[in-house]
Amino acid sequence: MSLKNVPKVELHLHLEGAAPPAFIRGLAKRKNMDISGVFDADGGYAFTDFRHFLQVYEAATATLQTPEDYHRLTLAVLEESAANGVIYTESFLSPDFCGGRDVGAWREYLHAIRDAADQAEREFGIVMRGIVTCIRHFGPEKARQTALCAAETAGDWLTGFGLAGDERVGKPKDFAYAFDMAREAGLRLTAHAGEWGGAQSVRDALHDLRVERIGHGVRAAEDPALVEELAETGTVLEVCPGSNIALGLFRSWRSHPIGGFFDKGLKVTVSTDDPPFFHTSMTREYDRLADAFGWDDAVFTTLNTTAVNAAFCDDDTRAALL
Ligand code: ADE
Ligand code: ZN
Image (cartoon, rainbow, N blue to C red; front, side, top):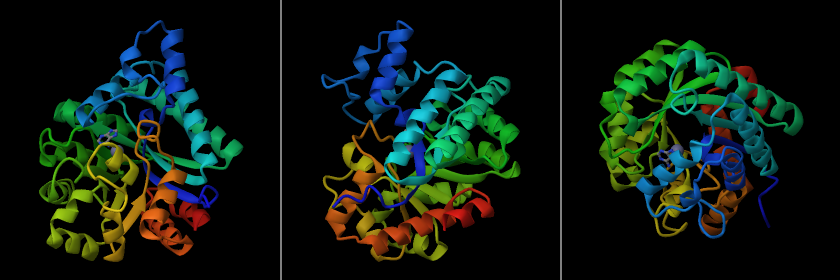
């Protein structure tokens, strides 16, 4: 039986990474852009490894050029999430792609995304909040400009700041200035770590960026002392098992560390990351996890309660989800 109708809370979703291939193809056609290398013979996104994934992601994103494009994208993404039982989603938003980190342009993109989110809440009953993310392989200076965009628009809807991109480039401390600026503006903090970097990368993100959540964090499994520290500190992990498996980090659902993490009492949550790229959805994540680990409704309720408590929203919004 599918877990499609179980209510779900998702904390880690890249807005551009959730764009259906047909949506991007349509935009490319309308704009006369040749992005044929982005797709495979079946019309899905085509990539061979993580670095190539990032290139394809950025090539697909190049078709998104106006606030109106982002309005339509946000509506399409939230409709699909709601169809999979998602009642609350936190999405990574990128001023790098939305107006080239210019604060004025960013405001216009954010306004369009938020307007679409309000419409989706009315029409599909899904609640969204935004997390501005800087992109590690674009470097610390662009991250600083991104943090300025985030700080200027921080509030009850734009509630977080994060770090995504290629973890093998640079160190978390290179981004400390951007994270300090975001923290000063009242934003809650998360960073991708322990996906392509090992346990030390997770430690560095926690200690140098002082984040309260870690995106992925799965490579912590290589270091039992770190697993213990994560359990003791109650650090929340935004785990995206289908993404990790599609990108070749783990060979199977059974061998994914999320099962052991949950058994050891870590605060794990489940998300899709970039669902069409990885041929996944929140329903598929739940179904595969139930198959692999024998997880039942009680486990999924625990995961969702953890996610609601770790969500970067205000307490009234949180209370409505519990
Ligand atoms: N951006 C989109 N998906 C990502 C991932 N899985 N890791 C790092 N950056 C990303
Ligand atoms: Zn991610």
